[in-house]
Image (tube, rainbow, N blue to C red; front, top):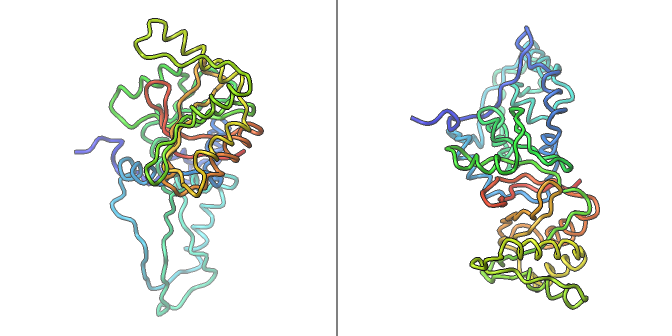
Length: 331
C-alpha cells in the first residue's frame, strides 16, 4: 500500500465557490503570496528533463500517458458552453493552476457535429508540463516541502505558510518523503563561481583551478582551500570563499567555462557556488544538462546575464549547503 503522497496526483484541489467552480480570488491570493509560481509559465533556460521524468514517475505516478486516441464526435452547444463557462471564471490564472484547480478541456466546438465524424487527438505532455505536475503534487500533498526564498530574505517560507531557517529546511531531508523543492531568486550582482564539470565524453574539467589561476595572475590573493583534517579548516574555508567573492569577476568566470568546454565538448554536468544574500557561505548547485544545452547558456546567459539582471532557480534541497537544480529561468 503506497503512502498518501505517492498516490497518483494529476491536479491540486483549490477552494471552490458555492457553484462548484474554482475560487479565482483564492488562487489569485495564493499567487500574490508565492509569485514564484508564475515562473512555471515561462520558457526555462535549462530544465533537467531526465530528473523531472524520474520525479514525475516517483511522485505523480501516472498510470499511463495517452499519446493518441480516436473518438466519434458528438458535441452539443450546451456541453461546449458548460466547459467554457467553467474556464471563464478563472481568468488571469496560469494554465497549470487552472487545470490543477479542476478546469476542463474544451473541445471548442460551436455547433453540433455529425456522429459519423471521427476526431483524432494527439496528446501533448512535455517536460515543462510534467514539471508543473510535480510542483502541483508538492502543492497538494507536501506543502511543507514546497519552499520559497526571497532574494533579500534570511528565511525560507513553505507553501503551508511556515517560516524556516536554512538549517530547518535541510533537516526536512532527514524525514521520510521527497526532497524539499526550493524556488529562489539570485539577485543581480551575485557571485556565480564555476567549480567543476564533465564533458559528455567523460572528461572532468576542474574549472575552479583555472578561476583561481586567472584571479591570481591579476594580482588578487586567494587563500588556499584547507584539507578536511586541518584543525583550522573552518576559518580557512571562510577566508577562501570570502576572497573569491570579494574579487569575483563575471567576465573571468565566463571565459573559464568557455575554455573548459571548448572545441565542441558538450556539458554533461556542471557545478557552481552561488552567493546568496541569505547565506554566509556560497551554496553548491549541481546542473545536469546531459549535453542537451549549449555551453553559452551556462557561460554567457547564466554567468554574465545572471550577474547583470539576476536569475531564478528551482532546485531540490540537499544536506550540506547543497542542491540539485531542476530548472533555471532568466529574468
